Length: 196
Image (cartoon, rainbow, N blue to C red; front, side, top):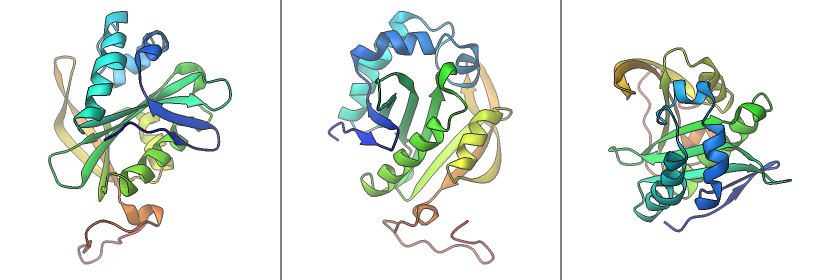
């Protein structure tokens, strides 16, 4: 897929590039980002250059992951990152995100995740967008809930992070949750609501 830029009222979601290495490196010095995400720890300048200059562009080129730098429309400061990654199941993708410490608490990440979800359902023809985070990552769960994800439970030993297997929370968003049509018909189980 050709890299694209998405926009919201306050934000631009654009593909990462080499120009983002310095700001990405600075943001990922935050112990919270290193603790709760799978970014390397310690996070070096070489890690940031690899992510912004090689891994992110390659993900767009081979249609496996679509990493967006989330920046303010006014001023262009890096707020964080949102990634949408393909999963093995047809039409299923996973979203992940982090927020630079100085931009937390303003709703930017929820706004960015909602826009990435809309794009996933319309441009990628996704029928399911999953969110997973290590059990205990309350801020990530709060963003997912505000973005409309429905919590589905816990998965034991479902995340391998920094040499340790960890339990995760999982939630999902489907097109109907955003008032959109899915690519394929969805038949909910008896007693399960198709929408929140």
